[in-house]
Image (cartoon, rainbow, N blue to C red):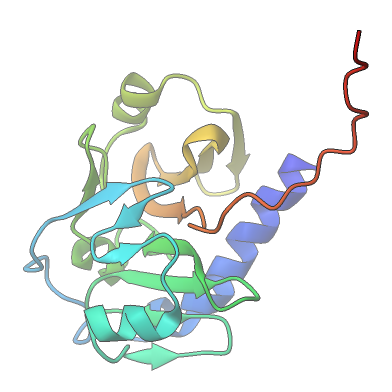
Length: 186
């Protein structure tokens, strides 16, 4: 199941960024001159915070370079913002699915508090977070390292990070219902 989920996530991301990465849009992507941003899995990627609606993202980051049915793409920042069905941001895709030399790798300047970001090595990721919850290897020296409890997935090419999926938690209150019987009174 995890293999299908990871493969699906990579396929969706590839489709979302194919136009940005497959055509020559290097003039749209920054040359690494963006200010550094902080990644806090489950919480934020720079100004994009958990619980934000797409309208709030646009208010913070400005108009995206491209808007699809599924995402706001900020190629100059090297990221895309994906909402859930309720319009609340669920995922931020960082870097470039086309590989380590893609223009969005240079554009994205985000780092976690542990210092991991674009071009971090596999060893640096493992040192910062330990062994991944799951991992998968693909053709061409591509590897995916998923850290489910942290809400982050790193995609590496030849041992270097070129793409990150950061999951954000909704700020909504817990609406789960407990169907367990009440404890018996004595």
